[in-house]
Length: 278
Image 1 (tube, rainbow, N blue to C red):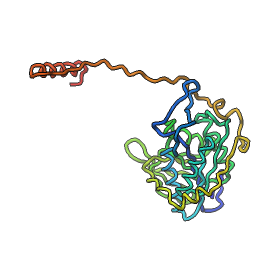
Image 2: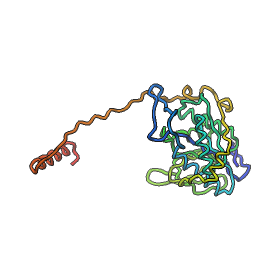
Image 3: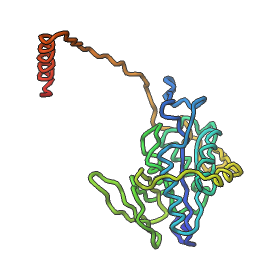
Image 4: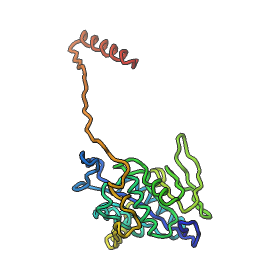
């Protein structure tokens, strides 16, 4: 175990995996007045990219032989379902951060609350995040947590090559290939799909998840400043939402005989030449 101040007290790893419950991709709806996502009445799932972080955490625990993995999620009460799914996959426990004061948070405010919760958990070796969430698609929360906790961060990690003497060796995805990166723990690591194939929940895991207690933390349980919470504490805003209109002006050619077919072919060639496509 490694304290957030870097002091080593034992070898078993303690890993935190922040996860997010997101709407099904085909069920995403936005509130055009507030610029926030409508989550009520929408079918939700665990952010698919967070499943890779869960699997990477499970493999780290298996490689170390022991350790504890805690899932952390900020959202409405129903986000506890996502935490139970993570426990069913093999994680040890889950903590839900739920408070109306958290609503409407951007990546800045979200990472602020998650960092405060991780600080409250105590000693942590590794924070494993999915590369990004499919609803926001920013990839900012993981690095944001690292910034709030003043920890090193490795992004776009496609593999974990080893761990020794408090240093995690990562294979990081870069343009044109990979780079090998040593990260001093404790640290934040965001992973991409290449890191591991997520396992399915087991029957025993599902039974354990149903019996697990999911504690809920509000803003009053964390050492946070009200001015940094929710929509009011978010420095970025969606100022306008609109549906783009699709207008296509086209010419339809329906040749009915050989001569019209030849004319149609000439017209197509002329069009392609005009667009400088041939």
